[in-house]
Length: 94
Image (cartoon, rainbow, N blue to C red; front, side, top):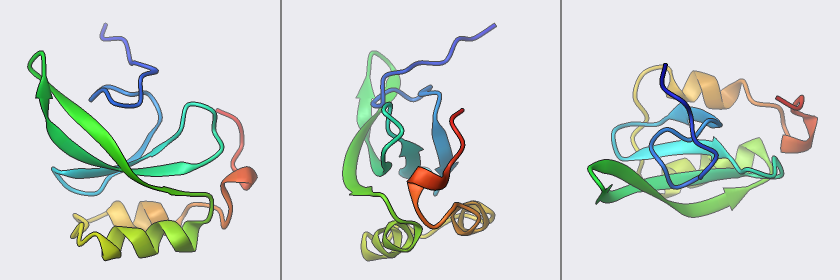
């Protein structure tokens, strides 16, 4: 069984909200206080490495930055983002 990671930069981070496409994803930060738009920045030790490029506490702001960065969401990714609560504080602790 493969374990998930609690390191935000790793490909197997355990709080991924959605994969926007092969180069972009949205995660919940490890403290649960913001959504982070991340870009895949190459590999480290043969695994994808992710870098935060935008930090949002509101759904509308998060969706705006997805388009501001030209992320081109794959099918289903926008449905996932649109289903998020208005503010991250409204999410249930997972």
